[in-house]
Amino acid sequence: CRPCISHNKFKKVPLYAYVNNCWLGSVPEELKDLSFLEELCIARARSTRCMIKLEKGPTGQFASKGNVCIFPQEPRSLESVLPPPLNILHDEIAIIFV
Image 1 (cartoon, rainbow, N blue to C red):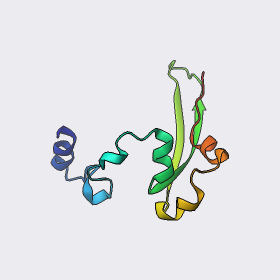
Image 2 (cartoon, rainbow, N blue to C red):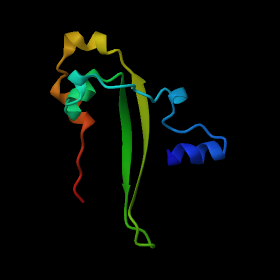
Image 3 (cartoon, helix red, strand yellow):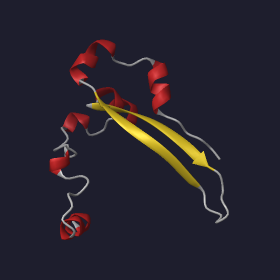
Image 4 (cartoon, rainbow, N blue to C red):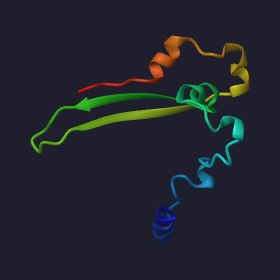
């Protein structure tokens, strides 16, 4: 693909390359139609993030700034707590209208 060719040209590893452990493989038929929340429940990792909305600057552009941390989780150990409590899912989704 074009992004991989570009990365190879500059001797960089593509972001979603197998070597970065980002390749998920083929998705089983049973999991293809999962909702976003269902995917969160069985994910191999959970993320936490802090986002900050920056106000309109002198250039007239809006921006946001943030950090994300990924924590591994073992889906098999989640069998006893599925579905997760609503307060956990509440923290996973935030929609802000500006």
